[in-house]
Image 1 (cartoon, rainbow, N blue to C red):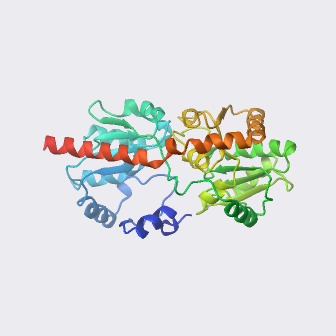
Image 2: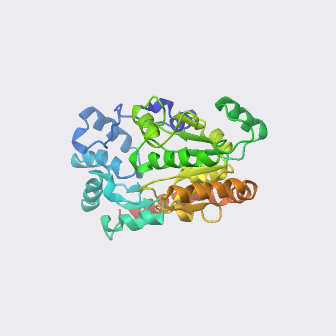
Length: 346
């Protein structure tokens, strides 16, 4: 379980003086349905929404709360945009029906997709009257940057990784969508040829204390001699990426515009990904795309490690393109456009 008050984004927002209101719920595997919200929780949400000029919903899962408010007449006449981040809406579970309902009742004003593959996938679920925008992901290049020799030495020392050995990073929660088993099979195979390489897995559930992860590692051929670091949730991902030569993505489905590939590249790592969502477009000129065949991915890893210096320079050269300033400016434009349209109608 990850507690909100320990989340780095919560800490940064509140540290900057931005108010963050919570419903004091515990999140589960499924998004909360409209019928599950208590009167107290709806009162909290309603008081916040009364102060809003625009509502941005993080994916369609958050629409359950807005529908519960809408059914009680507690949503003011302001634009509501669903920020969509998947390339396979059918795997959204019941939240997809909430998107349909929000669209059919007129609650939803627009959809903002983080990738073209997302916009295409959701096209049939949004009415023709809804605005459709694509704003590609971007990251904070002040946080995700090339580390100094001292910074990298400290991180390697803390993790017990020798100074010059290669490092592969896999940043994802323990979830079938992320296909951690595929990555672990790659690690087992890759370690046969390059036993000196260290492989780091980060994210919720990616620890040996998780019985399911430990069992999957064993099934995948990971042995005691494999240099695998199961780090779990980290609040220092910039430091982790700074020691990486490769940032890997083995997503099975659902990915749209993977942030881990951008964060790794901005830190000097080379992205190696399977072809899902807009991943191929994301790593164009800075990384490589592979099939799901273990031999293919291991060959790609070997090629990257052989050309580390050359490929690192390509990744760092893309920092301007993948920075967050462009994304923020585009969101600013879309939000002001929604506000302008709403005022014109009023």
